[in-house]
Image (cartoon, rainbow, N blue to C red; front, side, top):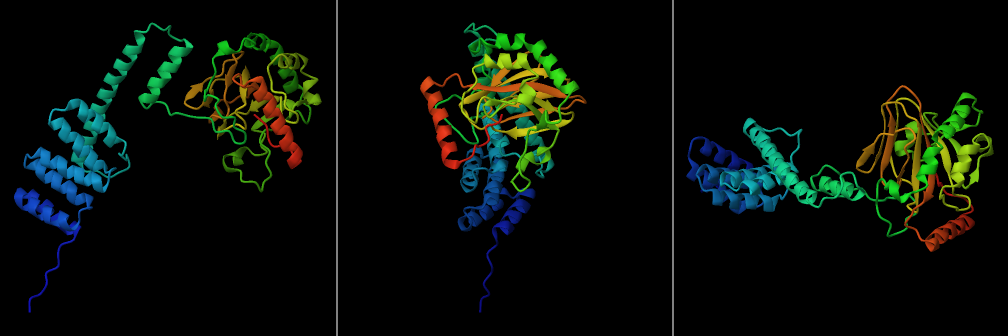
Length: 398
């Protein structure tokens, strides 16, 4: 009675083929792999070894067909993508190879375990793809430079950011308000100063506002500065846990939920006068809001999103030691005393104070300039109606 001989597994067939290739028996290796693939057509390792065998025999078109099989089984196979790019380079298709190397590198894991030939291939891929991207960027920037738009203009900055996004240097961030979203408003990280003629009034009062702040800091009332994050300890705190009810990030509220905070506002008449000239929202029980934001040394405010995209947020830096920074979306800036900016806080943003001194910024909200009068009134009415039904006021902080 004949004894049935077990067919080799896919792994056993791969190992056999590798041993055959190691001794130069390429034809035998190809036969083993072809037979195994008839039984295991979705095994990536078999396809990869078949590609290696065809490449070693000099049949690059057949190697490419084998790689197609590997990628049908696993479209994200790093080794298949890397080998495909290498064959394109071998065939003299330099730009196609550079692009293909870029695709392969999207699947590369720096923590992966690779043999020495693969590590050399990875280094080659990174080098060629970097050369290609540099050439591409030079071409792109050269093409728009011919337009003659002034360097530093708003349109030039937007074009530069577009190219940065294309080159993979910037992530695209969009509005993600935690509560209230009015459709159709653009996702702009930092707005252009030219859109806000009242900035001159605000920045011109910087020294007076600093003097009033100094008075608050030198002679604080017990209730002047309060932790900015104040959630009950049973709430899901997530990224706010380190700062919850902590003085490391505190606020001296001047306007809170639409009304002045007398203990603080009365001590800052110039600041309150300036705020009265700002286009702040007028929403009962919610806006306007304004505060001195105090960030203690070695403290970070984690990435987060604001409440509503119907308003923007203004920062006027007042006390800024070295080592402080602010990021909105893909753009990071350093505060400079007396130079305000306006940003959309529903786009992910974060702040840090890596210095050994206190950082203080005046913060307040303004209407989003793209809202019509009808939209402003509609928003105010929606908020009032919501408060009437729920019997409580949701968080509208900044």
